[in-house]
Structures are given as C-alpha cells and as structure tokens.
Length: 426
Ligand code: EPU
Image (cartoon, rainbow, N blue to C red; front, side, top):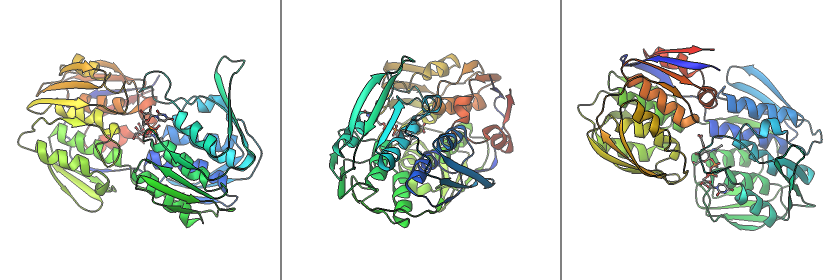
C-alpha cells in the first residue's frame, strides 16, 4: 500500500496552486446523463474520486476523453443500463449523484448502499434522497442481494414536480434533487437546502444548458421541469477546502511566506474571521491568499456549520493549527460523529487534546509535535495528519494514502515546491 514519508520542520515558502473543486467536479459526471450533447470540462482535478466518477459514467454507457491536463470532454450515448456497479458504488459516496439522472432518463435504477469516507456512525444515510425521489413519484424497494449487501430498486413512470422539505441540510441531497427535478413534469420546490458554492455553480451550469432553476445559494430552490438539456462548457470552481487547508498549513508551519493561487477567498469568509481572531498574518486578493509568519497564534473555539459557516471539511486542519496556538480551544464537530477520532493520532504525536464526547474535543496549546507511524483514516483527517507531520520534529510515515489521493491532486509534488520533505513510497 502506498505511503507518505515526511521529514518535518522544513521551512515552507513559495507558491502553491489550488486545483478544481472535488465536490463540484464529481457532480458534473452524473449531469452528463441528462443530455446527448458533449460537455467540455475545464479545471478538472485529477484525483481518485474523479477517476471513479469517470469510470461510473463509462460503465453506464458514457465516454470520457482527455483533451489535455484538466480538460476533458464527456458524453453520454444513451446505452440502457439501470444497474450501478457495486464495485464503484462501494468506493465513493458521490456515486449517489448518478441515481437521480438514471431514474429521470430510464424510469428505473438499481444500486447498493454507497461507500466513501467512514465519518459517521454506520453507513452514511441516504434517506433524504429516497424521500425526495418518492415525493417525485418514485417507488422504492429495498432488497438483500445474493452478495449479502442491501440494494435499492427505484422505479417511476414519470417524475413529477413536488414540494420537498429537507429535515436535515444536505449538500448532495440538494444537488441530487435539483438535477433530477430538471426533467420532472411541472415545478419542484426544495426547502431547507444547502447553500454551498458548488450548488450555485452546478445550478448556473444547468441554467446555461436550458434548465430553469432559481434560488440556488439560498435555502429555497425552485426548478421548472423541461424536456431537453443542451451540452456546453463547465469550468470547475477552485477547491475552497483545498485553499483553506493550504492556508492553515502555512499558518501552522509559520516559517515563511506562502502564496495560495487560483482560489476564491470569498468562499472562505468563516475561516478569515477566525484568522482575524487567532492572529494569522494574511492578506487576500480576488483569487489568492498570502500567509506570512505571525508573531503569536491564539486559541479560538470553532463550531462546524453548513455553508456559509465553518466547513466540517476544514475542521481537521484547524484542529492541527490549534495545537500550535496559545490557550485552549473547543472544537465542536456538528455534522459527522467520527470526524474527531483522528485526534487520537495527534495525541500520539504529542498534542494535548481531551475528547469530551464524539462531537467535541478541547485542544490545549501550544505543543511540540513528534513524528510517528500513522494511518490515514479518511480524506480530510489524512490531510490534517500531513500538516501535523510537516510541523513535527522527526520522521512520520502515513499509510493508506489512497484516502488522501481521493481528494488532493499530486499533493506530494506540490508540497515539495514549498520546500516540504515528503516522499511517496509505493
Ligand atoms: N444526511 C442524512 N441523510 C441523507 C444525507 C445526509 O441524514 O440522506 C446527513 C449526514 O449524515 C450528515 C449531514 O446530513 O450528518 C450532512 O451530510 P451531507 O449529505 O451534506 O453530506 P454529503 O452531501 O454526503 C457533502 C460533501 C462532503 C462534505 C459535506 C458537508 C460531496 C461529494 N461531499 O457530503 O465532503 O463534508 O457535504 O459539507 O459533496 C469531503 O469532501 O471530504 C466530504 C466528506
């Protein structure tokens, strides 16, 4: 299994470029099922989860052509396949995004429960999706496949517009129901929607192809059903989580000037507000962030929240940053109940962290960190361990880096450009 070997405490300085957003890119592959015309994609991150989405599209009868780095053309040729292959569905949670489009074009879809990061107790639920599809007229059957896994079988004669209230705010459920409603008869109103920039970007793209979506980026979205969607061009927005993570890496290392390029700082206002409180020395332009060494970092509590609040995907690097800040900080993870378990590994590295319950830890800082032998439990925690290793004394080995490659493109190469001593060992 591939691993990273990191020799810590090398000064980090220079420039690092942010990739296209994983969580925006993953949704365009299912959208391509809704049109027979090609879609040209720009700024596509070349990461494992995106490769899985490409494989899923191909397995369903689509084509993926690489034009050059980051530029792809995708096309769906209408081959009938209502089965989503378990080998892919088990690998990434965003596979759930294909369900709505398959249902919309064939009236049937069969799939096992989706996999992905293990960051909640048990399998991450899909009830919001199923309830939404049911409201739009679909019948849902759950059965035990001969392989022992639970499968879902959804059928519908004609999807119809519906009034859907999400009892919980969910990014992918909002996006899924929004894209499925494009082909439903009549109007769909979605309430208590997530408001993430990736949703706005997806809605803008769909509208440019003929969809009639209003309100994306607010808590109520309306979609008027149409009959045909065009293809087009889709430029994937910069990855706000990657930008924020690099900013926290630079702040935690506190060793030189780091310029984070090709990002949209206006998507990270919650982070900049925290930086003001804890004393990070930073400046922003429209598309870059500059982090300079700070005199002293102060501890500050944080509570994760749906956008525009502080993203759960930024919680783990922030927790590492707090190990370098003066004072106590309470980290309250409200979205997922397994996302703080990685702090156990930070403790092994020398951090002073007390777990109050699965949703809350207290970090007492600053503490020196020391290199250790670690295993990446999931994508964001894995990235946080890399930050910890880069600021720790000595050598750290991080195993199971497939989890990190799922979301960060050529991370080791890009970090070496900043001066990091990080090696990939296959
Ligand atoms: N939830 C339900 N039922 C559902 C769906 C979600 O109860 O049917 C709950 C979840 O258990 C969780 C909450 O709703 O407690 C929010 O989950 P959400 O559905 O928003 O998560 P997601 O849409 O599956 C997306 C991102 C995540 C990111 C979250 C929160 C994608 C592909 N994934 O996940 O990204 O953490 O929104 O912002 O867009 C990551 O990139 O590492 C990652 C996990």
